[in-house]
Image (cartoon, rainbow, N blue to C red; front, side):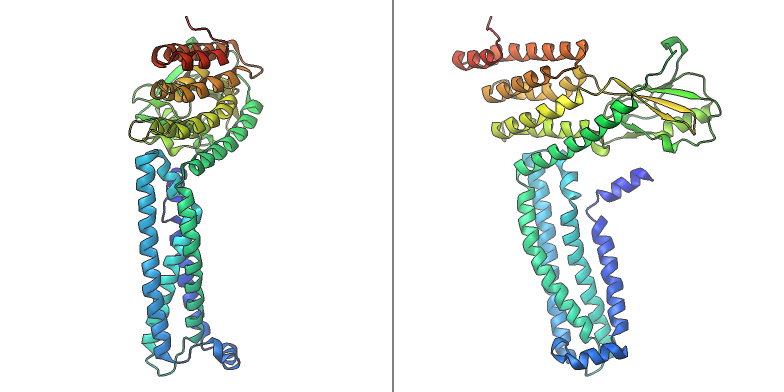
Length: 423
């Protein structure tokens, strides 16, 4: 159910459906109120605001339907053009974020809802077959909604032109990921309670029944009365890691029945799409893919790649502060779950290495990567394993700089900034 909810939320039709239903109900309400005495009195006192001639009302409604239909078609066409451009120039991974933009969904929903409202009122006008209009208030409301659609169209043009600008896309992903990282850091550091008294010999392994990207373990999906004895679990893959069918998924402190194993597998979210989850790592991967696409020969935009690298530095510095393992305790269910976080070495391999491989000939991007590494090395409280991973990556970058930056002056300038000498 939760997965279905997130899928529906990211759909471009999510808000348009609800807004259309709301305006459909509003049309029914206004048509019902037309013949109420107090509405008739309002019409008489303010006759200049309401259409009494049926032909005039029919012409206005027909014009509104044709005009709004054109706006809707044009707006949807622009959305498709934007999605195609974003996929071609930046990264296909950005499409869900553009499709699920609430502002665009609200505008398109208002278009469709107004179109539906005008159609219902026009049908009602034709059903009465009277010389004098009995839908004067409804026609006036339709005209107001039509004017609102024109205003929203101007806003839509501005929003869609801003949404496709790569600097705005990168900034939006950065702030969204940074916000989630802050929440995760606060939560992870508070929940750090390692499992005690367990060795590998004491643990039983549960394998995955399908292949895909591990997203999360939802403890709420485990029936509270299923496990009568306290259970300790270790999640082997980290969020966003790809696992294969039959590969280890969980470790437990005791043997479980087939029913219990199936219940634990059901609580594990494994998706075919890497970006179905909500972990901050997925935002970092999106930024990495934008930088890689920017450095591809077809785009050749080192400025965008450098901007992404500058955004990745602070985000990665927060990611490597996460403990290797954190635990979630559910007292009511007697379950302790130890979650595995991606290691610093794995993080650099996933985020830094692809950019380094594509940008190893560009001195400005390589200098930016070295600057980001230097920034991360300055973080206090790093473990020896984290420091070794950063030093190893810095050595790999030095090797690429020496091998691929052909200009001696540029090469020496990059290495001099970080007190690295060319061998």
